[in-house]
Length: 350
Length: 200
Image 1 (tube, helix red, strand yellow):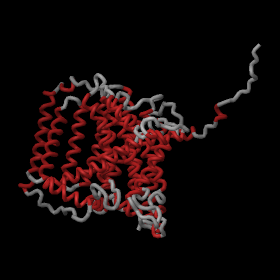
Image 2 (spheres, chains in turn orange, purple; image 1 turned 90 degrees about the horizontal axis):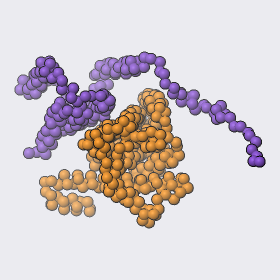
Image 3 (cartoon, chains in turn blue, brown; image 1 turned 135 degrees about the vertical axis):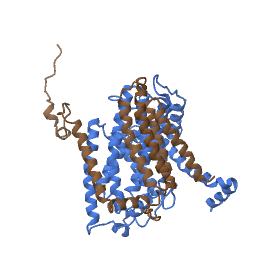
Image 4 (cartoon, one colour; image 1 turned 60 degrees about the horizontal axis):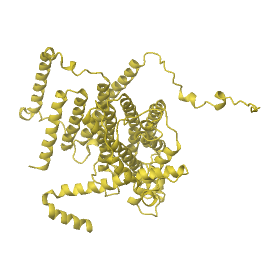
């Protein structure tokens, strides 16, 4: 095989350092396409929203406007990063990295199919929860370091929003790991491939989204709130309320947006793996494969864009009410329901 | 040197430096950030010991939740950096007693290897079970009552915090969303029919 030949070649070249080189190579193979996907997600978003609003969207730079994201990136790179007076310089520059890094680090444990995963650890779901909980630092620190009341209040607001929806999201994930009896993402996908409907060749009815439909809905809404996307995008509501990144400019500002889109791809991947069967094929007569995973991720991402084009922005107290007074009680009740269901003779997750 | 040893010393050096900076940093927010770094590296060290559940829980709970609230509080306080160092000498005796106690305690734990403290009958985790399963099994079998008791105490803590902050009747004018959704346009808007004015 080609992979084996490459492995042999590298082993000869680097000797004892080979495992390190091999790991770095694998990381690059995940990160590079991911960054490209982030860039083209912004392009896709502008196109889709354009079509939904009967416009054409970006169409000037390159054929069909395809070079637009690269042009945007270059423009932002060449802009000056203005650092406000009295701001905490090091923390100010550190904050965007805090926002972006977790979105990349979480990919270490994401499986692409049965064998294709960088680190197959047993507690991968727990790892993802803990890594993504670090992302909130980028928001708090950027708000504080800007030395501006508005940025500070915006940071507090967005951080409180993220923490609130993390609780609902975590509870939804607890239900998933209960029925899958594992914290390993690969095993969670495997558990969705078994069941009454999967045996009849209708695999998509065995995936977690159907038996755990309320949790799927809670998870979908929570990830939109968690990534600070419309209709929960108070940070970007420049007409009525300002967010934590008002003082940022140039590439420092762009990194916050890269983080937002990278997080969108990450949570969409998680939704596909946890609720939509990952790389499993929806019907029996088609083979499983990585292509299905990409298709599902794209579908969830499309929902993100669709929601943004459709709904008006929530008010802040409505966001908090939805998180704390609707989703968390719903999750707690459903947790008990699924627990009883699993103990009853009607258990479908044997 | 083995790679694992190198990683251990690397993480330990960062951990010790970060710990030192927590107490020497002038800015309280920086101190809190160094504490975050210390927690994160400590979780790396635990990961080396193959205690992956504890390591991840440390990041999830302390870095992801506790320190965020800590930062909230520290940032909200109006701290005068110059006045922070006042009273250093008057606090020194109490501080040094506490420091001495901690040194003794750490000495006992770290010297445990030589004093034979670790030859206990506590079972080592089974190799084939994952950490999470082992911890979960113990929590729900042997330690189920202490575990439930701890959760009830936490619940009481939550209720107490809410009760303390919500003693007065709320005075804000927010409308309840459950009433809001039932609002109809005809309750609020009156459409008038007016004859068009003619210009003369």
